[in-house]
Image (tube, rainbow over all chains, first blue to last red; front, side, top):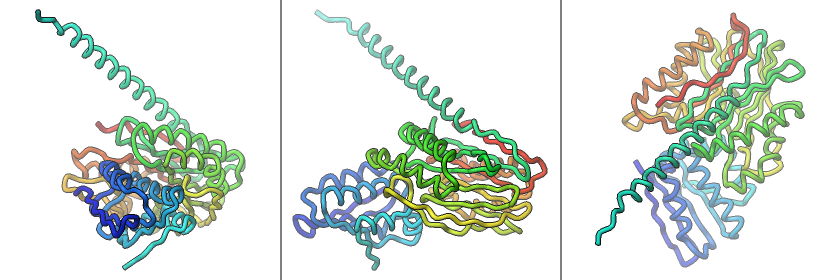
Length: 108
Length: 278
């Protein structure tokens, strides 16, 4: 299983990345590339509903976008992670980081 | 007129071979340094046994463990995992070790140690877009207590009376995640013949040829089947079981474990590193 990224452009400054499969050291560059391709972001949503596995390098990719949202002043929300991914985020303290940096989190 | 390029091709190939050999030699030297630093934690204590081992996925790795004997007789134990793999992770592992060794001397408990470590390396980690997960605890072998704090690391497993469970959770953000963090502490009693198993996620995320993960359940089963053995034998059983599961699949992540066995017959503390599986 590899990584599949679907990019939806809601309008010229509002984007959504739907992440499927595995986000690890072997797929991180594709994830970074998908983010770097977007310009003039006001709002970015990342949907993790179909993310099956994430390792520390993949978490680093998410962290990069969280820090970028601060530096570039865009609104970020990370949505729909499954229970396993949620547990990993919880252990790492990612929710505290997201809360502290005003990153939204939605569940459906 | 035709020109003979064979000599220049030969020279180029030779140069590449020499560069590769030089690079390999330097990586092996770096590996030796890392192994020596991880090996430096041989201590003798009473009332228990503590072993550690680390098997990098590549020549060098980003996992870290350390034992530090405090002036009050307690042993400060740390296990950690740097984001990523290979040389970049190994460089940050050395940075983390330095932060721990400095903090262990000057802080009164594991929570303060993690705060001091985060304060020391937060800016560097942020600049490098990296992070480190660390679990830190003080083992009081006289009072049979373990006091701990956690910076985003997977919780150790407590083997007691034929049951295996993670110890009670304590909140804490990974090092490099946020500045100025306070890490709360919790404590519990360790009973006679209990085992504490500290590990990195390379164990439960080891994969077989079908892409299945080793997972926590297999680790718990292995611990239950072997926890009456010595710490060394338990460690060997875990490693054998993981590699029996993954068979010839390449190791994707560093595998590191520390085993604390309370009131073992041979009271001693040692750390070592297994040879890399190739």
